[in-house]
Image 1 (cartoon, rainbow, N blue to C red):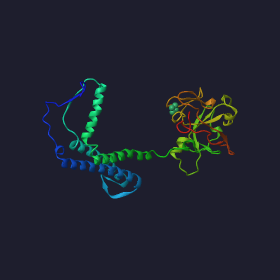
Image 2 (image 1 turned 135 degrees about the vertical axis):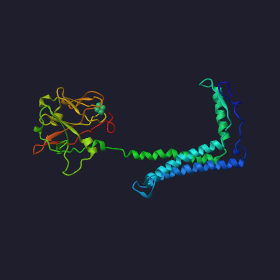
Image 3 (image 1 turned 120 degrees about the vertical axis):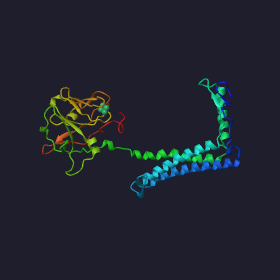
Image 4 (image 1 turned 180 degrees about the horizontal axis):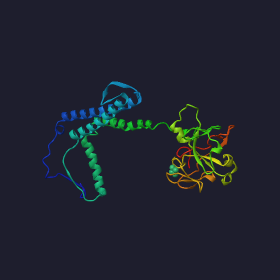
Length: 330
Ligand code: FES
């Protein structure tokens, strides 16, 4: 040992008492088998957990409650995981207590970084310790531990399934189609241009078939803000101007930064403001970002009126609504 880190027998410690496995090869072999059994039980626990996760449907129940639960999927998943962790811990403890070296030493530390010579000493000592622990010799323990740890390491992978499927292009789809009426929210009443005064703002949703339920996830994507200005107040190109109707312009309400509801409209400045991180959008310039972290304007919904004079979408959104996580690089 070096001068910096020194392992010495402490004369103050009581005399070392050898364990049976230290002196009796039969006892050592028995302890080895016991450790291996514990690791194998741990592996079986992991297999039970993975098997129940994959093969037992979530709606299967047993007749008697275990810890107040009758759901077989949850019970076997939990019991498998508990057995996996419990037995691997027990195996490690039993191994340490019966077979690993247990001589008491005192380590005297001086500096944090050891000289190279000491580091080499350390590697040699670690190797000697591993040899003394019998990892090389005790192939049964080595293999069963490898099996147990390998399977335990795999188990988090299967839980990735709980994150659900990737959204693919789902986030870019909304319920808006050509001819979909804009209705009040709440109230579901179709809206005419004359219902909105200049300076007014209203939240709208796409009309749904009578009696149908509106999915919460759709409300999140479909919400649209209608704002009425005087037509001469717009500063839009010809195409975007043709997407407005008599000074009424429609934007997705979902902030293009991180998806909060853009809920504040300043009538004087004609700015829409997102309360989450203060992104500010200029309504007169097709919701161009003039402040804050949003990287792109709020998508504009092209609108017109149908034969009965109700406001309708001219076409679906031409770009994904909401934040830029999935479909965009901006
Ligand atoms: S979510 Fe709107 S500014 Fe961040």
